[in-house]
Length: 185
Image (cartoon, rainbow, N blue to C red; front, top):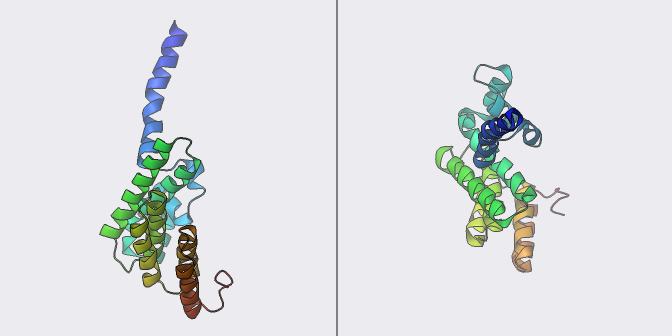
């Protein structure tokens, strides 16, 4: 009987931690290993810590909002691993919300904003919101016209939608800005 009570208590007290991690997108240590290094500094270090201060110095004042970007990336990763459709939808919606927070609260000039838009566009596309996804992909290119990856993601999006002409035009546009890009060639 005591054994069952101990197991019951263990289950009661361990579930909220797991649910919190899943519901908020806050990454576990294992998940954190797959995210950019600045996410580790933002999510595991405090102001004043040398690693935190290093990344704040590199990324600027809007680093204070970056935990939402990191959570969004983690939720996208969870989307790819989810086994049920309802979980996948939940992760995409939560990722879109976190990226949306960045769009609303971080400066448009923040160095990570092109990545924010690319990732939100990807989540929107997977959620079936194609016109909104296209707007975000274009915004990423507008913010950093020399980022070859943004052109390839938009071109792949067009190919997936069977819009080969738009895909070719996107690659051509990218090559004007990044003519030596192997990715675009």
